Length: 405
Image (cartoon, rainbow, N blue to C red):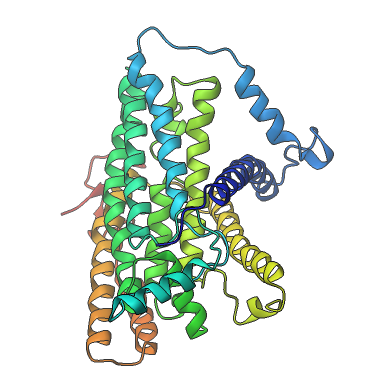
């Protein structure tokens, strides 16, 4: 294990928390700018040059607005829900590398060899709050699943039917999509042989290719499940303002509402880091990360910039997707998880096990993944277009159809 340095850890915590919270504020501005661009509008441009100070104005508004607590709510859980949502979101960042790291040493045949490798590992500085956590991915997934308690507490304690419906939708959605989310990365674990995020990034840097090249299907499953876990459009049914007024946070205002919204963007940032590390090589970029190896500080800054750039590209893609695909119905949302993504996740896992067992080239996994995706695309009928025929019995008014058996 790396040595504990309180000063370095305090600097990392302050820098990481400040950077993430600042990024969350400007992601809200980016969301509004992207939506204005897609919808051919101007967007926020009055506060500061080009609207760059708009997040500061929004944050000040949340702090200064009147604190309203409706009389009909369960005050204890009503106040607890925003804290649970934001604390679980921020705690997940503890094991996520945000720059260059060194893979922690594995088992050694004797104690002397183990101590030598540990001493060598401790001489390297890793851009991660809690390095050498062997179950780092499971830690992130566990805290992501705990975030649903914040949503459920918010919806239940509000004593509001719209909030309760949003909480029920969220519990079903998050629990359902946790299964394909976890299954999509099992193939990555089998290929690398570790659940440590630092080791996964180091493996891709050593082999000089990204795991998305051999696991494109797993990446697609992870991407869809991550959007559903974060309740991003087209999976924002827990909020669904057209149907539920505001969903689970209908009764919230001022800073409590700000915390609930902030947790959503923190989840987006964390998912961006995880996707970049699991499938896109982490801090590696086809050898370009070694351009400044002669300068340790320059090399560390360059690798951190590469990883953060990949995370920002993921966030930008999420902002575009929000205004590209319309919201699914709830039955479609559940059908995609249980009838499409889970079977594909199982098939992908079995294929990885077979390839690893017989020691075939990993390029076979690329062909298999493309074949599985093509088989789903060629399947006649889908969760949004059922195969059952649609007929109109005599006597029904115009514009009404009936699904036959």
